[in-house]
Length: 213
Ligand code: SF4
Image (tube, rainbow, N blue to C red; front, side, top):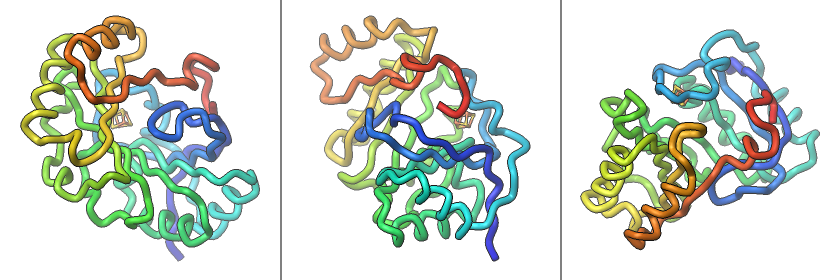
């Protein structure tokens, strides 16, 4: 039977993206091949517990909410994640997948809403973006930029233009927490009339860096 290495399963409010504010069960998979400078989940790089998929699906169901977010680490680094995503969709959950954008997202179950990062230069991982992923994104999906400074912002604007991103899917811009002042990013977006969604990480406003929140 397929197993996955899991760091944590918990109930919180979705802190980001289209379903922000909704009660959501998070399934955090262990491990990530990237090392973004501003990563806030380094505790998920190692450790974790091997779990079987039916047991995980049952644990998610016991929370009694409709939305599930499969995250990491980098969840696509474990092949069996596809089986988990299928099982959660089959069970009737609204499923989102948060991914770095460095691995192939095109084989993900089409019922899943993909929230895919494009790593800006300030992350130190811009070379890991898998640009082929953009071709299979649809209006169900979202592309997220986490921006450290004006150079990252200018780079993100260039990607919007070159790849016609806002025509493909929803686009999210976030400031690196504690580094780029949110108001500064908001003002740049307004000045440029960018058709992107500005977002802050709601869970950090509510609970700071507490784990399992
Ligand atoms: S991809 Fe995500 S989990 Fe991996 S290092 Fe970057 S921010 Fe951290």
